[in-house]
Image 1 (spheres, rainbow, N blue to C red):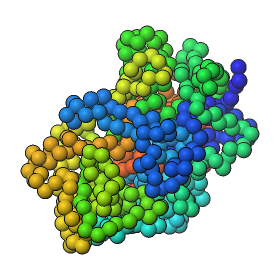
Image 2: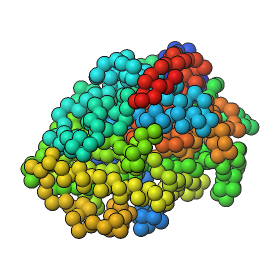
Image 3: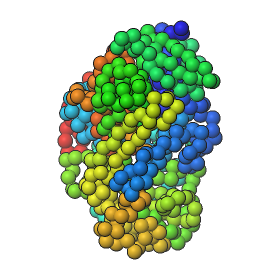
Image 4: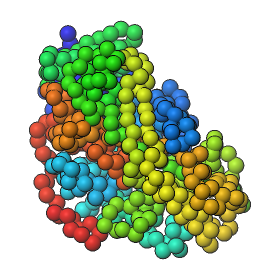
Length: 522
């Protein structure tokens, strides 16, 4: 049986990073397994075309079960099934989250995951167009750039926010997160830079790295509670490989818990009900599912609006504290772009501009479980969106804020009819019904293999799966609490930090002293 030092399962936002960093040592052999194919589809590399990838062969195209608080709707959640994972099909927005996010992780018992601990790993990845600073790095493999040609209405959105008293923020990843500005993007030379193009493509010639695409991992192999290998299907043939060191599971918030459960790690009663032998009874596997939910407000435009080829559509943004509590992370995030982004089809047809509100810190929690014992079946996803009344009320508040922004002088020369929600929806009751009828996932599922020290923790702060040896989870599923904003950059950071944990070394300063807003982090 073929042997490698490490097997990395999933060539996504974290997996490509881990594979790159581990193979920096020429004596370390790594097998990287990806269920999807190579990233050769042209639309992947054209920033404006990311919405054309929905439901194609590079998308797992998962749906939730009927959501009880959304009138029984099943909610679509795109997940990348291709080299680069979801970083190959997302909107390319680079948002790290808020310092409070990581300090909360540490407060929950995850030592080594405070903001001061993770900032060096963000900087390590980054090739920042704005140059090096206490917040940014320029020596990394991931290009982070300003938008090349933002639309006029995206700039008007920033003007509108300032007119309403919100601060202008030129850098959401700098000294503070709140305020309005244009999003930075993971684009290089006018093309998307996924983790595949940034971290994997440059090292494909390393003799100690083997990359196998269209390889569906069906189960982990154990000797007792020691993980010793993996089984995967490739070209209709079942293969098995052994590991000398560790297996690193980077399959994401849906498929990492799925593979753990298929392999006998998870809630014992659930596994036994499907005839799966229990290796370790871990009740937290698949629990703690969190996601960001969004709601649009769309207007027709009285003038033609154009999108540049390098546009990601969601060009401008705003982070705010709806309850004016600056001691916490902003609870609402907004996106704005020059498209008519209206339900039910969310088609980019007709001239218009739209803004969406996104709930940063949902109180609702969902779960992932197995539909059957077959690796070919999709996981059973129950998000429980809007289970919490406070989640609904905050999204309604966000819709009202977008309406205020849209009515400022900044939009006077562009504002046409409000097509969503529509001028007839004015009362709180009508807006609540609108939110329940049209809200959609913004595709940031996390938390299903959470890091921690409590009974429902799946991995420890070293990202080692509890109760077994030789197995770690390294992806967004380990987040105990979802970050404030888009989750791609935090997932890349997790990959960077995990690589050092795996290698047992630290290549970054142990402490950095930074002034964050009005507070000092040491």
